[in-house]
Length: 402
Ligand SMILES: [Zn+2]
Image 1: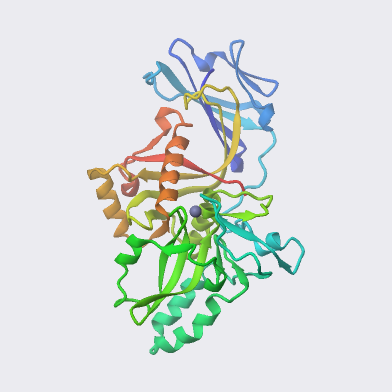
Image 2: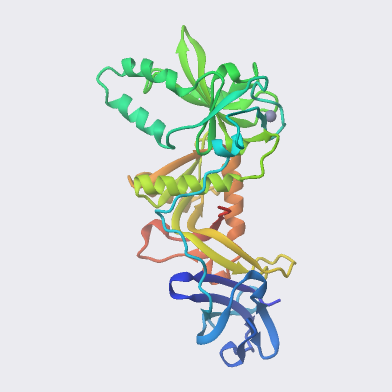
């Protein structure tokens, strides 16, 4: 198998591909495009028909990237091919992101609906399922942020807090946010959730707002399921509202849509980028407060085509994926480079923090590292001296299924 990776450049109708061959093969002399496939002499490199791409040899450009062979003794080449049919219009940053598990989907045409919400890890039921819930969408994802903003700027915040509280969660209502359901504590199965001990012990009740959002875990398996809004009355923590994260639960009966955490991450990245006009994110664990990754959004919406030649996996299938291209730093390895960059990014006001359960952050880093392996060696790292925020960062992809 000849390793192959390509990116569709829709705006200029170009497919920018990379292949790697033995040093003895001069690609620029032996390359041919025939029947929508790429050949070296008579050996087929890749047939693009199965992934719905049409290429021609018009304006073909072939460049040897470097004469130095990689670890497998192969030399990389870059090939620019003409896309005969341009890919569908790619979405810009301004385009709406798909919402998963909306109230409309949950209701399926009924005004109320019986739904079970279970812990994704152990399947224990979290929501009292004897009730016919009213299902409604929350006004906007950044609603909380706005509410907190008003409260912070009030001269008598306590008056507002009292007034705001009933809006947060209502009995027998399932309020649907972008990545969570907001539920009244009376509707949560008794004693099935518990505040996370580490987060709870860290909470300083003497500072900040009068209520606190604290990570909550499933009492049965201790996996994180969401966040609880607590206040303190007579030294006791009182639960006021519960957010169950859509990526930590299962819905019963199950829905056709089965979104993954990365689908919610994509909407968080895009929505935050739109509102705060930032492209840089620190991914932080809610429990440990560790920074897991620094992510720079590079391309919101692009298509990549690759075989497993560079990843080293032993399958010959050709994939075409819709992805978000990112420049990232895996911060799980504690070293001077990581610490320096976390410091640099943390001190920069245009960087946004996205906080998720630690297990989800760890999975994300694993996925990012795997995505980098799709690329040829010479494209895996970003190290331009002028780009101080991304020195020695990696290139990776976040899958988009919307
Ligand atoms: Zn559980």
